[in-house]
Image (cartoon, rainbow, N blue to C red; front, side, top):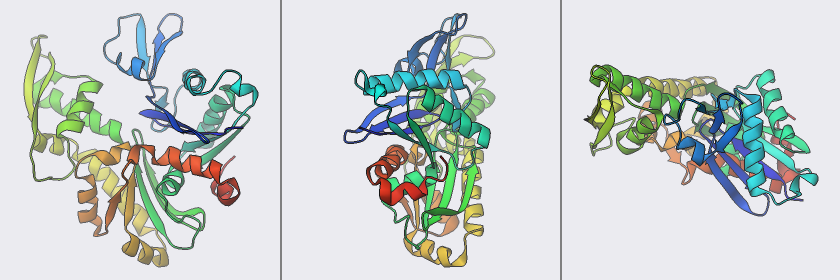
Length: 333
């Protein structure tokens, strides 16, 4: 019976089915009818509606800061996604599901995740902390006594874990991620140019001209939005230097969290990290120059995974494939 690995992220939901690889990667967005609460669209289709919906429709993100903010909508979304990837009658087989969750998750948030996944048709729900799943996904030796360090920058949270002997020895979890970069850009454009822009525009600014550290090539782009004074649409030009300045606060929060995790790491493991360096995973790790900045701030080698967005779901999938070997890393059931 094919088991399922799920990375239920603030920005994207990824699903891997045993034997079939990653079968779904969709934005964690649901468009619902305001009056009835009925879902009208999910995933990419719903994300395209963000900031564009008529009065009767609202596009919502059921995940906030890496955890479920709206259990009912999250369950609907999961049901829909699982229905897309699973053949008819699949849930009569009641699959075993491993879900990646932030390491700083509370007991109540854990229950919400379990309830949503079980409600969507799972037989057993196992939770794995995101830094652990990401470490397994990139192939770090998590079961050995050697220390490995992972910085997983997601949409809503940044998870940092120092891992040895199948456990997280030192960690830091902050509710800052890719979404905070977008919000900082929106606030900056509003304050500096009196221009109102939406989430999707802020995200494309971040991807095209955003950087955490000078990268040697300064870029620029035109941005369309609504003038706050005249109320009329207008276009401005933004430069990578000012966007870098705009996102300094969330970037520095991530750097600070990495330092805190390093400060509480036992000296024997610190020695391993000096040799091995830090692995960066998660979609937020794609911010240009973030690896360069972390290397400059910590003096340690930084390795960015080739596919940082899929590390957590790949790790959860490996746990399912090699259950006997890795079931000990599932801290919570």
